[in-house]
Length: 247
Ligand code: NAP
Image (cartoon, rainbow, N blue to C red; front, side, top):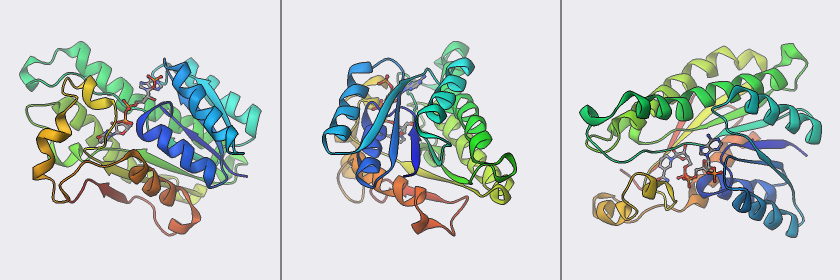
């Protein structure tokens, strides 16, 4: 049984990926930060259906938490096979000129530096040269890396741009370590994140401009993430799948 660690798996896209991964016979690490109840619910749902999962709290912006997350994963399930860098945050919509540095730092810390930390710990367990068996990393970017999110959250979009560049560079650097690195770029997915941006009905406002005329469901993103995680995509590295209703 392969082990998959999903950051931010208590809710939204991460939770959907955890549930689907368990159905596909992975041992699942459900990472969360604050929402223990939601993470425990995901784990119970998996276990009730006969799957294997554990919830591990870690604020992935904190280096000591990340080290603990990966060592605990290894202790419980052995070497990690797949990392899904999913956890991410939005701040309130506003013009770029109004964003203070505290906000921008928080966005980059959570959406970029935390992914760097998690990925470094994953490579230590996966790399062939370190005695690992290789592995797969899937980064959850955003279509915002291409649109730039003007008037809403340019800071967030820029952070996702950094994740795209990271995906390209890292995929080439660790290919000979047996590690593939790919990304998904969702948009307009029905999750709590839009409330954090200050507009819970954002998808409703935008949906007429989406070619498929609707928002997406977390499971529709999970399907692409798990395809990239699986051997079905064995000749893909450094690629992006846009899951954005045609926009
Ligand atoms: P969500 O429903 O708001 O869930 C966010 C998850 O991230 C939660 O599980 C949360 O944990 C976790 N998290 C936040 N900060 C964390 C930290 N410091 N340490 C550990 N976990 C942390 O978000 P979502 O919409 O599913 O988004 C998932 C990913 O998809 C993000 O990277 C987001 O940028 C990306 N994305 C989403 C959309 C969309 O339309 N929804 C579009 C493009 C990209 P707690 O529950 O413990 O707080």
